[in-house]
Length: 306
Ligand SMILES: [Zn+2]
Image (cartoon, rainbow, N blue to C red; front, side):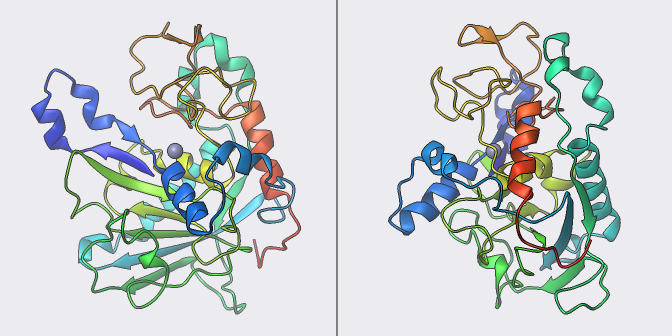
């Protein structure tokens, strides 16, 4: 999950104005919870090492997307334009075309990767009927608590069942923030492709209707990175190679600010530009991250359509 601090927190700590942009992700937490419930090891690094990257998701480089808007108030029933904007940003980010790539420091321009995925709203539903790739479901649920109602939007009576997860990337848009208490809100979350998630009815990405659609918002880019098997570079909380990639420098903690351009962690320049870190200036995947994601997608499942 990505989490962002409440604005109230930023007010309380006015000396730290960047707090409002702070992001905390809990993809780890929900995936480990899912593994634990099945009596499996919660060692994610080991679990991901066993994932057959060549066969777990999809079949071609085009990713058919269905967006399920599960709404209670009119504001939560977001317009098509917002969804189109999210998909457009995904296409820029996953095809190395985002304009803010120019912000990458010289030390890392040589390892910028092109994932090469094209996201498109589905044009055919699972029954072969024409669709906009957007469904809209009214719910009596005023908000979904990410901790206790993690998957409740993914089935009736509160939500809508996924379209075949082997053929579509399912994205649920709903309110996962308004009832939150404490210092952080969860902006979005996705499961890693392990522990029986792939193809199951919980597979996909959940994003808040409000926080997740702001200008420059990269929640979808980050969480869909998890969906395609990427770990955070800092997940081990020590100076070991947590994500398995040589072109994401070793780091022992997330980086939130991009103000220190010479910031070192574990004795090396930290790549805070990476989409899988938490910084507000994240703008890139690396070559090895891109190759890994492409391996996850290049599988045996034939998408229903493109
Ligand atoms: Zn994350």
